[in-house]
Length: 173
Image 1: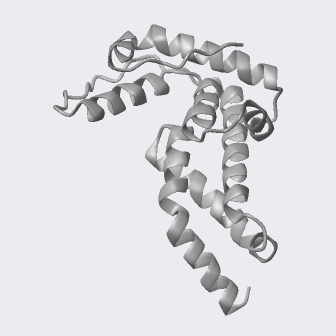
Image 2 (image 1 turned 120 degrees about the horizontal axis):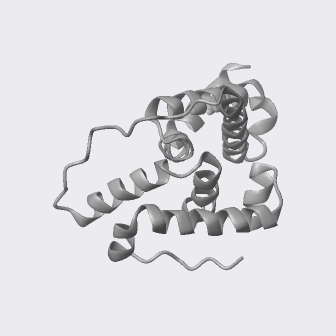
Image 3 (image 1 turned 90 degrees about the vertical axis):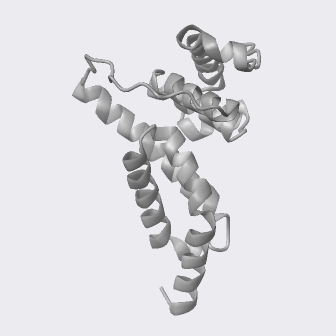
C-alpha cells in the first residue's frame, strides 16, 4: 500500500471507529470481544483497501463484522459452554432515566441468544430492512421475521420493567 492509501485508510479508521465500535459492542455484548471483532474487520479491510476505497469501505467492514460474529456463534455452539451462575453484581440506579433505560436494555439484550440479539441490533439499531438483515446474517427473510418476533417477546418476558419506561414497536411476522 502506498503512502497516500495508508493515509486514507488511517483517516477512515479515525473517523469511523467510534460508530463501528458501538456496532461491534452491540453485536458481542462485551467490550474486549468488540475490540477484537473490530480489529479483525479493520485488518481485513486494510488488506483489500485498494479496491475498497473506491466503493463503500464502511459497508465492507460492517459486513465482515456480521460474518465474523456469526462464525463466532457457530464455534461457540460447538463448544457447548453453559453459564451456571448469575453474576452477583447489580447496577446501581442512575438518577437519569436514559442511563437507567440503557443499562436495563443492555442487561436484557445480553440475556437473549446471540442470534436474537444480532437480529434486534441490525433491525432496530442499524435500521436495516428485513432483507438487508437476512443478507447480512445469511438466512431467509422469514427467519429474520420469526427471530425478531421471538426476540421482542423474550425481551418482554425478561425485562417487563422496560415496558413501563418505553414501548416496544409491535412486530408482525
